[in-house]
Length: 256
Image (tube, rainbow, N blue to C red; front, side, top):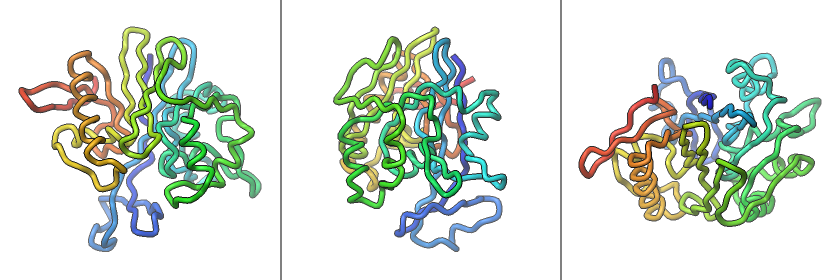
Protein backbone atom coordinates (compact mmCIF):
# COMPACT_ATOMS: atom_id res chain seq x y z
CA UNK A 1 0.00 0.00 0.00
CA UNK A 2 1.27 3.46 -0.93
CA UNK A 3 -0.11 6.60 0.76
CA UNK A 4 0.27 10.18 -0.46
CA UNK A 5 -0.81 13.47 1.12
CA UNK A 6 -2.00 15.77 -1.67
CA UNK A 7 -1.45 19.08 0.11
CA UNK A 8 -3.35 22.04 -1.32
CA UNK A 9 -1.83 24.67 0.96
CA UNK A 10 -3.08 27.01 3.68
CA UNK A 11 -6.17 29.19 3.63
CA UNK A 12 -7.98 31.74 5.75
CA UNK A 13 -11.75 31.53 6.18
CA UNK A 14 -13.80 34.46 7.45
CA UNK A 15 -17.50 34.90 8.23
CA UNK A 16 -18.33 34.77 4.51
CA UNK A 17 -16.90 31.20 4.44
CA UNK A 18 -14.69 32.07 1.49
CA UNK A 19 -11.36 30.26 1.37
CA UNK A 20 -8.52 32.66 0.60
CA UNK A 21 -4.98 31.34 0.00
CA UNK A 22 -2.66 32.18 2.89
CA UNK A 23 1.12 31.95 2.73
CA UNK A 24 2.57 32.14 6.27
CA UNK A 25 5.87 33.34 4.77
CA UNK A 26 4.43 36.43 3.09
CA UNK A 27 0.92 37.03 4.49
CA UNK A 28 0.04 38.44 7.91
CA UNK A 29 -2.60 37.03 10.23
CA UNK A 30 -3.31 40.60 11.38
CA UNK A 31 -4.52 41.50 7.90
CA UNK A 32 -7.31 38.93 8.16
CA UNK A 33 -9.10 39.64 11.45
CA UNK A 34 -11.69 37.13 12.60
CA UNK A 35 -10.45 34.46 10.21
CA UNK A 36 -9.87 30.78 10.83
CA UNK A 37 -6.66 29.42 9.29
CA UNK A 38 -6.60 25.89 7.92
CA UNK A 39 -4.50 23.59 5.77
CA UNK A 40 -6.08 21.22 3.26
CA UNK A 41 -4.76 17.67 2.61
CA UNK A 42 -6.74 15.24 0.47
CA UNK A 43 -5.15 11.78 0.37
CA UNK A 44 -4.36 9.18 -2.26
CA UNK A 45 -3.91 5.48 -1.47
CA UNK A 46 -2.68 2.90 -3.96
CA UNK A 47 -3.62 -0.68 -3.14
CA UNK A 48 -3.30 -3.85 -5.19
CA UNK A 49 -6.85 -3.37 -6.48
CA UNK A 50 -7.71 0.34 -6.26
CA UNK A 51 -6.48 3.89 -6.50
CA UNK A 52 -8.37 5.64 -3.71
CA UNK A 53 -8.97 9.34 -3.02
CA UNK A 54 -10.07 10.31 0.49
CA UNK A 55 -11.92 13.66 0.43
CA UNK A 56 -11.27 15.96 -2.50
CA UNK A 57 -10.10 19.38 -1.32
CA UNK A 58 -11.42 22.74 -2.45
CA UNK A 59 -11.54 22.18 -6.19
CA UNK A 60 -9.19 25.09 -6.88
CA UNK A 61 -7.15 25.22 -10.08
CA UNK A 62 -3.51 26.09 -10.75
CA UNK A 63 -2.21 28.72 -13.17
CA UNK A 64 -2.59 26.28 -16.07
CA UNK A 65 -6.32 25.88 -15.40
CA UNK A 66 -5.70 22.37 -14.08
CA UNK A 67 -7.45 21.08 -10.98
CA UNK A 68 -4.89 21.12 -8.15
CA UNK A 69 -6.10 17.71 -7.03
CA UNK A 70 -5.53 16.24 -10.48
CA UNK A 71 -2.06 17.74 -10.74
CA UNK A 72 -1.10 16.47 -7.30
CA UNK A 73 -2.22 12.97 -8.31
CA UNK A 74 -0.01 13.24 -11.41
CA UNK A 75 2.87 14.44 -9.23
CA UNK A 76 2.44 11.25 -7.19
CA UNK A 77 2.92 9.23 -10.37
CA UNK A 78 -0.66 8.37 -11.32
CA UNK A 79 -3.32 9.53 -13.76
CA UNK A 80 -6.56 10.99 -12.32
CA UNK A 81 -8.52 8.68 -14.64
CA UNK A 82 -7.03 5.73 -12.74
CA UNK A 83 -8.88 6.70 -9.55
CA UNK A 84 -11.38 3.91 -8.90
CA UNK A 85 -12.73 4.83 -5.46
CA UNK A 86 -13.53 8.18 -3.81
CA UNK A 87 -14.29 7.97 -0.08
CA UNK A 88 -16.02 11.03 1.41
CA UNK A 89 -16.03 11.68 5.16
CA UNK A 90 -18.64 14.43 4.64
CA UNK A 91 -19.57 17.03 2.06
CA UNK A 92 -18.58 20.41 3.50
CA UNK A 93 -17.11 22.53 0.73
CA UNK A 94 -13.48 22.28 1.82
CA UNK A 95 -13.76 18.49 1.51
CA UNK A 96 -16.02 18.19 -1.55
CA UNK A 97 -14.97 21.00 -3.91
CA UNK A 98 -12.73 18.68 -5.91
CA UNK A 99 -15.54 16.23 -6.62
CA UNK A 100 -16.23 18.26 -9.75
CA UNK A 101 -14.23 20.32 -12.21
CA UNK A 102 -15.32 23.22 -14.41
CA UNK A 103 -14.72 22.70 -18.12
CA UNK A 104 -16.10 25.01 -20.80
CA UNK A 105 -18.34 26.71 -18.28
CA UNK A 106 -19.90 23.48 -17.02
CA UNK A 107 -19.26 21.42 -13.90
CA UNK A 108 -18.61 17.72 -14.40
CA UNK A 109 -17.36 14.89 -12.16
CA UNK A 110 -13.61 15.00 -11.55
CA UNK A 111 -13.34 11.22 -11.38
CA UNK A 112 -15.86 9.87 -13.90
CA UNK A 113 -14.48 6.32 -13.73
CA UNK A 114 -14.62 6.10 -9.93
CA UNK A 115 -17.17 4.84 -7.44
CA UNK A 116 -18.03 7.55 -4.88
CA UNK A 117 -18.92 6.46 -1.34
CA UNK A 118 -21.16 8.91 0.55
CA UNK A 119 -23.53 8.64 3.50
CA UNK A 120 -27.03 8.90 2.03
CA UNK A 121 -28.32 11.45 4.54
CA UNK A 122 -25.18 13.56 4.16
CA UNK A 123 -25.88 13.65 0.40
CA UNK A 124 -29.48 14.68 1.03
CA UNK A 125 -28.31 17.41 3.42
CA UNK A 126 -25.86 18.79 0.85
CA UNK A 127 -28.34 18.61 -1.99
CA UNK A 128 -30.93 20.51 0.05
CA UNK A 129 -28.57 23.50 0.04
CA UNK A 130 -29.81 24.95 3.33
CA UNK A 131 -26.31 25.61 4.69
CA UNK A 132 -23.49 27.66 3.17
CA UNK A 133 -21.11 24.88 4.28
CA UNK A 134 -22.47 22.87 1.34
CA UNK A 135 -22.36 23.93 -2.32
CA UNK A 136 -25.46 22.43 -3.91
CA UNK A 137 -24.18 22.86 -7.46
CA UNK A 138 -21.40 20.33 -6.75
CA UNK A 139 -23.86 17.58 -5.93
CA UNK A 140 -26.16 18.41 -8.80
CA UNK A 141 -23.20 18.02 -11.18
CA UNK A 142 -22.13 14.79 -9.48
CA UNK A 143 -25.47 13.05 -10.12
CA UNK A 144 -24.09 11.51 -13.32
CA UNK A 145 -21.26 9.79 -11.42
CA UNK A 146 -21.23 6.31 -9.91
CA UNK A 147 -22.34 6.88 -6.31
CA UNK A 148 -22.68 4.23 -3.61
CA UNK A 149 -24.89 5.58 -0.85
CA UNK A 150 -24.21 3.94 2.50
CA UNK A 151 -26.20 4.18 5.71
CA UNK A 152 -24.83 3.77 9.20
CA UNK A 153 -21.67 1.69 9.57
CA UNK A 154 -20.47 -1.35 7.68
CA UNK A 155 -17.99 -3.04 5.39
CA UNK A 156 -17.61 -1.47 1.96
CA UNK A 157 -15.41 -4.22 0.56
CA UNK A 158 -12.67 -6.46 1.85
CA UNK A 159 -10.28 -4.36 3.94
CA UNK A 160 -12.33 -1.12 3.85
CA UNK A 161 -14.94 -0.24 6.48
CA UNK A 162 -16.91 2.92 7.20
CA UNK A 163 -18.43 4.15 10.45
CA UNK A 164 -21.15 6.74 10.91
CA UNK A 165 -19.64 8.94 13.63
CA UNK A 166 -21.72 12.13 13.68
CA UNK A 167 -19.53 14.40 15.77
CA UNK A 168 -18.45 17.11 13.34
CA UNK A 169 -21.78 17.08 11.48
CA UNK A 170 -24.78 14.72 11.82
CA UNK A 171 -23.81 12.31 9.03
CA UNK A 172 -20.02 12.45 9.18
CA UNK A 173 -18.26 9.12 8.66
CA UNK A 174 -14.74 7.80 9.20
CA UNK A 175 -12.89 5.10 7.26
CA UNK A 176 -10.58 2.26 8.20
CA UNK A 177 -8.44 0.54 5.59
CA UNK A 178 -6.79 -2.67 6.74
CA UNK A 179 -4.92 -4.51 4.01
CA UNK A 180 -1.49 -5.42 2.68
CA UNK A 181 -0.01 -5.37 6.18
CA UNK A 182 -1.01 -1.73 6.87
CA UNK A 183 -3.81 -0.26 8.97
CA UNK A 184 -4.94 3.23 8.01
CA UNK A 185 -7.48 5.47 9.73
CA UNK A 186 -9.06 8.52 8.11
CA UNK A 187 -11.09 10.61 10.54
CA UNK A 188 -12.03 13.53 8.29
CA UNK A 189 -12.90 16.50 10.48
CA UNK A 190 -13.16 14.47 13.68
CA UNK A 191 -9.40 13.85 13.73
CA UNK A 192 -8.21 16.64 11.43
CA UNK A 193 -4.78 17.36 12.93
CA UNK A 194 -2.34 15.78 15.41
CA UNK A 195 -2.69 18.68 17.84
CA UNK A 196 -6.28 17.72 18.56
CA UNK A 197 -5.06 14.45 20.06
CA UNK A 198 -2.29 16.09 22.03
CA UNK A 199 -4.50 18.85 23.48
CA UNK A 200 -8.00 17.83 24.57
CA UNK A 201 -10.55 20.53 23.79
CA UNK A 202 -14.06 21.09 22.50
CA UNK A 203 -13.97 22.71 19.05
CA UNK A 204 -16.59 25.35 18.22
CA UNK A 205 -16.73 24.28 14.60
CA UNK A 206 -18.03 20.78 15.49
CA UNK A 207 -21.79 20.27 15.61
CA UNK A 208 -21.37 18.21 18.78
CA UNK A 209 -18.07 19.37 20.22
CA UNK A 210 -18.14 17.11 23.25
CA UNK A 211 -18.92 14.02 21.18
CA UNK A 212 -16.19 14.90 18.68
CA UNK A 213 -13.68 15.28 21.54
CA UNK A 214 -14.70 11.89 22.95
CA UNK A 215 -14.42 10.29 19.52
CA UNK A 216 -10.89 11.66 19.10
CA UNK A 217 -9.95 10.04 22.41
CA UNK A 218 -11.34 6.69 21.21
CA UNK A 219 -9.62 6.97 17.84
CA UNK A 220 -6.32 7.83 19.50
CA UNK A 221 -6.48 4.87 21.87
CA UNK A 222 -7.23 2.44 19.06
CA UNK A 223 -4.59 3.90 16.77
CA UNK A 224 -1.95 3.64 19.49
CA UNK A 225 -2.84 0.11 20.61
CA UNK A 226 -3.29 -1.36 17.12
CA UNK A 227 -0.62 0.57 15.21
CA UNK A 228 -2.88 2.49 12.84
CA UNK A 229 -1.49 5.13 10.53
CA UNK A 230 -3.63 8.27 10.88
CA UNK A 231 -4.35 10.65 7.99
CA UNK A 232 -4.78 14.26 9.17
CA UNK A 233 -6.76 16.28 6.63
CA UNK A 234 -6.14 19.74 8.14
CA UNK A 235 -2.64 19.26 9.51
CA UNK A 236 -0.18 22.11 9.03
CA UNK A 237 2.85 20.05 10.14
CA UNK A 238 2.73 16.43 8.96
CA UNK A 239 -0.33 14.83 7.39
CA UNK A 240 0.46 11.13 8.02
CA UNK A 241 1.37 10.05 11.53
CA UNK A 242 1.68 7.30 14.12
CA UNK A 243 -0.04 7.72 17.49
CA UNK A 244 1.75 6.69 20.68
CA UNK A 245 0.56 6.62 24.28
CA UNK A 246 2.59 8.56 26.84
CA UNK A 247 0.87 7.68 30.10
CA UNK A 248 -2.54 9.37 29.96
CA UNK A 249 -1.49 11.48 26.99
CA UNK A 250 -0.88 10.97 23.29
CA UNK A 251 2.15 11.70 21.15
CA UNK A 252 2.03 11.77 17.38
CA UNK A 253 5.07 11.19 15.21
CA UNK A 254 5.41 11.55 11.45
CA UNK A 255 5.14 8.27 9.60
CA UNK A 256 8.44 6.98 8.26
